[in-house]
Image (cartoon, helix red, strand yellow):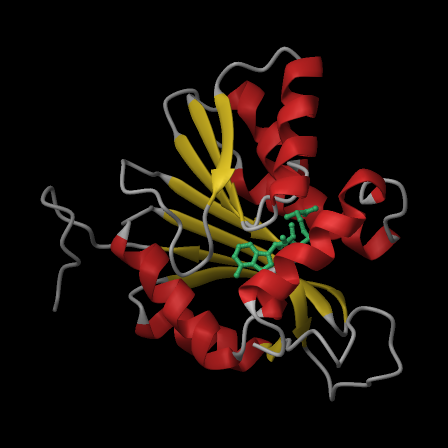
Length: 211
Ligand SMILES: C[S@@+](CC[C@H](N)C(=O)[O-])C[C@H]1O[C@@H](n2cnc3c(N)ncnc32)[C@H](O)[C@@H]1O
């Protein structure tokens, strides 16, 4: 991680009030694909990590039993809570938690995260994916800045001084090592995509078959 958690939180606290105002078409396409692939049913509990102002969490809440949003920036969480109130959504909550310490240990069926894991170093992304795997969701939908092509630092999707995007291959390895199978890879741009990871072969005790 090129900045500490506190530094990232402070950066997003500052941006929070105008965060929703300017979003690139690629961001919007990515968020839409995360929402489409997550596709929760009415008895699903969704955990949205690095939820920000709640773009994904608020879109999924009307379809899910409950949505839990976690973020490190209190400013972003306040915006998300205000939007939930405005929209009259009572089955969504927003509280502090990070990728590697999400502060959530209940049942979770679907984990989502959009445009945020690129703040972690690759080894930290791997830890975060392992933490999610231990929560035993059936599905993890990750939209983010990720490299399909040779990275070009002049492209607008990340800031090399604060961001640390992974290659798609690095992320795919981390998912499979954590017991997920990748069931879809959506390329939006050479540096933006969505990975859909499923945990299959779970027996009734939640233990992956075959080791
Ligand atoms: C670009 S915003 C994306 C927000 C939201 N997911 C969206 O799609 O609009 C990145 C978010 O990641 C959060 N964040 C950064 N590092 C984090 C970490 N280690 N754990 C949890 N959230 C983190 C920031 O506070 C910020 O709200």
